[in-house]
Image (cartoon, rainbow, N blue to C red):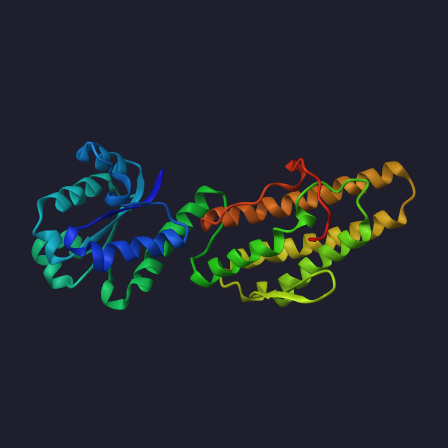
Length: 294
């Protein structure tokens, strides 16, 4: 699917609900189909909306009095209802200025669907939508996710800063000095466990939440595995420094690269799940770089 959600609404609700809700969803990493962003001068209105409906996982429907008084939004609702079946939930109802009794007067079936009200605030509406969309995206990526927590997304957004450093941008070449490389790996592990990101002199650069604060147990287990791989990489560098045999050193360097590649691939699945841009795989980076930032 090209889009995570299609927002169906009456134009009267665009300023108060639709635009700010769309901005919240986009800032949380969702791909949102919204008419004013996708329709261009000369486009066929029906064709573009049909395409948007067909290429969206879910339809976020802003139900209000204005919505039920207009013909076109209800056509969109009918189209979304036609996409549903017992195995696929499509319609995500949002009540704006109405309650279940009002909805029931227009559509008893729609009133029976669990909805979220804008009375709770648009942040809570966005969170309710993300709790449906993000686990589905995770499943599609082969990532096990128990639930969606906004705090976890923020933590992994910060986590990208920890790993977007020279120690993970290129292969561990034979010319690489193992000492600063090992220190970089050790400081990455420290940042995960303490939430303190430091430079090579030990000066604090930034504070983030440590991985102990991850709410989803599956994501927590994944980060524990990454922490274990960091420790293993540090130990491999120590072994490398102890070996004189060139063949053994080459094998250890290969293990170091494999560990870093696997860590970034694991993180990339999580970042992609949350709509956060991924990092290149270390051994696929052609330009070599120093271990430390200038």
